[in-house]
Image (cartoon, rainbow, N blue to C red):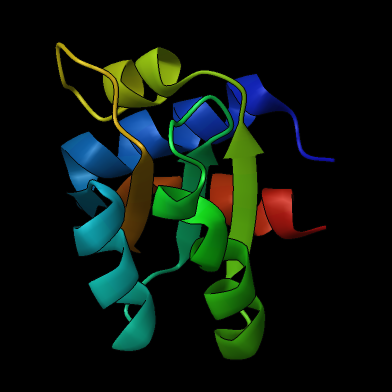
Length: 104
């Protein structure tokens, strides 16, 4: 399993140098369009149905999908003051190498 800190760091770098989508709906759209390079979703989302479909969609589209334990951590990495259920990195920017490393 990928290191949570590395995943959050990759999201932060992509946020400042590339492009990310925040929230379950935006993330789902990015996956369906095949734009997402990395998807991270929170394990502590209630109800679970909000993010349950993401790993399956990612598997279909061959997109790296990683579970993060807390939505607050995910929200902070995405530059939000609140937690978020999911984040998709659409344009890696300077995080390209970090995301490639996570795939190994």
